[in-house]
Image (cartoon, rainbow, N blue to C red; front, top):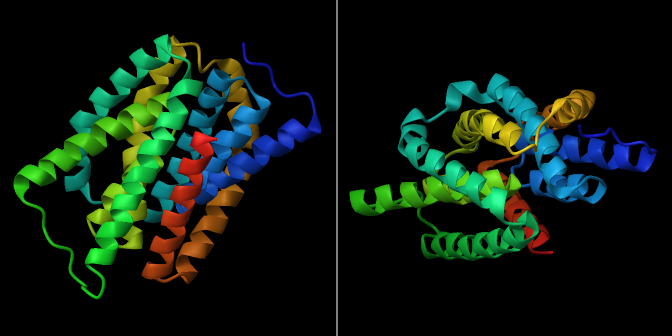
Length: 253
């Protein structure tokens, strides 16, 4: 069973990571990538993934409480089957491959996608409308995003940046973005739990650790909600994309 940390430094790192998780779920997405690094610094890689998954679910619940009225269900329906495929594929890979090999690859892919996002934003600068993609491209983007998000979240809890890029390309407002992200990740993270238990990533020790970190997640969520209320759409997008870049870089390192 996963052992609880015995020193104050480890608990501090985990508490700060949990705070970033709450902040990412209810505020500026991307900061949870910092939590990946903090959790992995004081716990074995797979155990840290399990503990962080439970904290992410707690953060999802706070986000749903704040933003559930703004969810775009049609997007979730479009992504759902592909995300299931990605999670299953990620579980198979995780059982066979060291996730230390996979995380840098995810980081490189995310940085490439971020570059594409910035290029597209530059191309449509000064335009208020977001052009509708042709049906074939729209479904292809959904398939690629859902599969990539499912695999990335199973391998390294790193699907957030994938969804950030997809939803911003769809032209979502900050509240639509947060509401849709909240329901997407609650469903995905709950779906991952049986796989994580079967792989030995989650046990009673990780559940107890997540319960101990609940106050830090709550504080982070409250702080994130306060920030969202005070920033404009453009500021929100810039901050989210910046944190996505930082998170991708940390995965590579």
